[in-house]
Length: 135
Image (cartoon, rainbow, N blue to C red; front, side):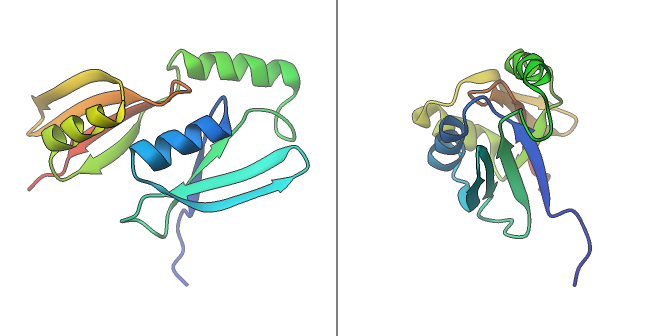
């Protein structure tokens, strides 16, 4: 057994909307989608990283009360959470491809620090940096 981190979660305003974005636009696939009452455990995987899961969770019970969940959802929508990083082989090509799927970018591909990166947000406001792998 290899120890390590198996999954990390982000908060989303609507799990179905987030699922459509990550699967249909970014090319992730569903790993787990189960419900326990009102709670839904929804995780996705990047096709080239089958051992790692990204959870798409709504803020709320059982972790947060209603007021805290509402405040957290508002912060996420404003882009207050730290960005996630998506490594790609060719940032400019992937930027062009994602534009055709309707992904809205907050930063066009830019050369810096010896590589190329671009920025976008998911429908809930979570920020992403797409960074070209160093060759």
